[in-house]
Length: 363
Image 1 (cartoon, helix red, strand yellow):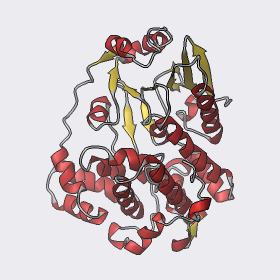
Image 2: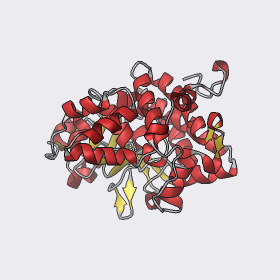
Image 3: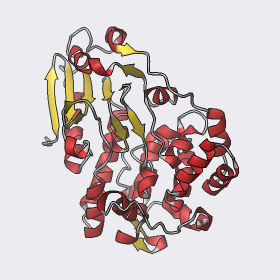
Image 4: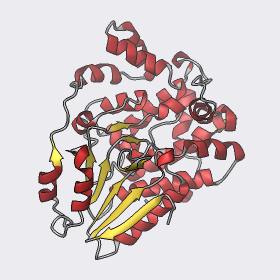
């Protein structure tokens, strides 16, 4: 078991605490393997009726869930040609698939930051519990990546074109917005998280129907500015990322100006890739989406059709700018959305493996 996971069985519930707070519980390969192992073990254990998962922060449990995958590792592994990078994504996506199809109630306490890989280990939950402290996002375009871990699948199921909006901008959501967009189910009082966690161990709560527990601990989500889905649909339903940016820049509203500015700072190439990803995923099963994303992530680090790999890939450059050198000045290539061609985008959706040898063929 990973040193960064705390697992125990109390009553008839299996409890998991992500315990890598100095890294905001960012997932590494050791954690992915540990989570997979314990979930497979409990899946077939008749004494375990439900599973609960939470994060921790520097002050103790709760306060933060998971900020994503370990992007520093991605950077180092890509530069070193470390094959563990390939293993990470294959095994992480398998874990995501396992959680989505888990046969027992899986309850995620999504307090604090829930981003990237943290979404991957929580969006498949039967009960996604947010708090007033929740900050949920898929911000991968900020580092020249795309919303993976099944992001194409769950973002494309958001109302209208809000999935495109979330995927392209990386917009963070609070509890109310997350529930409204179908990315969370219930809100908990952050001051009662410890009591709610402990109460799950009671025999009466650990059955398939947690209604009494929900009635006791769920609360009305905090008030928030109403999402303007009409406006989001108007812009993010346009046929290309370039068309979206141009339409936003032609609009005089503060929201449009701010959104356009955000997109202009993202990787132009990956904006077009992400738009295609989410729209393709709308007609896919989860397994099909994860196989597509496994193809895409290979191309992100080894983009042969653009003659790029290592330091020249969008993803490695994006991580460098955000988390390594921290200059926040990524050198995107191409630099502007107007320079992105269909020929640059289309190969991201071509599998580098023959169908019979795909690493996720058995999902």
